Image (cartoon, rainbow, N blue to C red; front, top):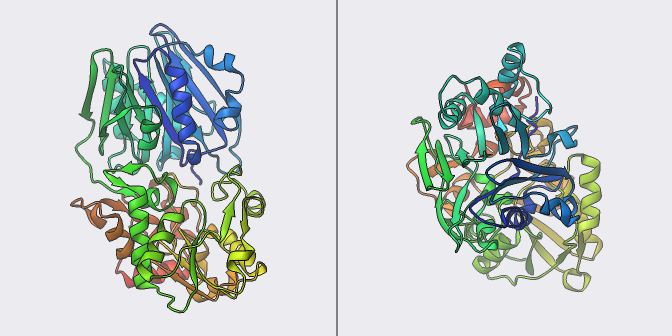
Length: 485
């Protein structure tokens, strides 16, 4: 089974005359989190209006009339990337539901790990689903709740779903934002000069629309924003902070802060730590893979005393290859998006810093690019531990077969990608570089991809995960004294 709602971006606003336009700008700043589709739902406190479609935010709302029709002072928006087989307009969010007594707009970042079980139960109870996205599960739970108020119905439903998630829910009376009990997926709140409140997956979106950061919504919390102001309430006491480490490693923009830690700063620290753990003393220069690895590369260069050079140029108008839905598209994307600077790399021994190796496709192509450009040696250094385990909380690496580190040793990977050497950052190196400092395992990080410790459990994925485990995964867990029950 594969989650159909993955690493996306959400943005919401309450109390602004140009709510849909502000949401457009907010979504544009979150475009790195998904390029498959986008949508906005707005309300004028009487009705809810929505538009969604496949494509980039600028493509979906190229016709200004589509934004102008989304009237009102409150809105929610969503940018999405799709997994294989789910790229259809039915799965583009926000979803807009019209009931006899109310209308609801809803969007979601993350993945529910008990969605399959819940969906089966709901369908047996007569529910009809219009998409393959697990986002729809929540609205069916809300409508079946016997609680008296919408807020209490929402709270009860949030206790039933499991996984990593951030929800934004819009009614004509309020904007709600919910974060899972582990805070796997982030949600930040900001306030604009006119008093309007905004909610976003990353603080960069708050900055872009000219708002001031107010707070983060914590694990197991529900924020309620309406004309009376803002309040945050717990919907569950069973919480343990475990923010997805991959937010810092790859997904978030460098100018975002997650749980008070700047992403660029954290990445730079991983680069410095990587240089001390995996040095290449005889190299001529350090180069980073644009864009998410540039911070780590600069840290590596500073710590190692090697010059930091621009050896790769990125075509900024090509979507990120890691989140392309098919292998064929990923390979084409790598060919289109990067080129080597021959005058810089020719005849040189290079330390190539990247943030991760998932399937190996991108890294292999980049090493090839550099050697075709005349590089004498390419030493690959990864500013994260090997991705040995699949993730089920909203990152598109949910099957073991996709992970080269789950199937090959470091030496084998090095040979496959054509590098002269390959080194990874240690698990402690990543944890200490991010330095969240929470009183929780891994100081408040979810390291599931790196060590197989699933903070929110496995639920519907458990059987398929266990059945697909490789010898490398089993050996890793055995050495750590874990059985991952």
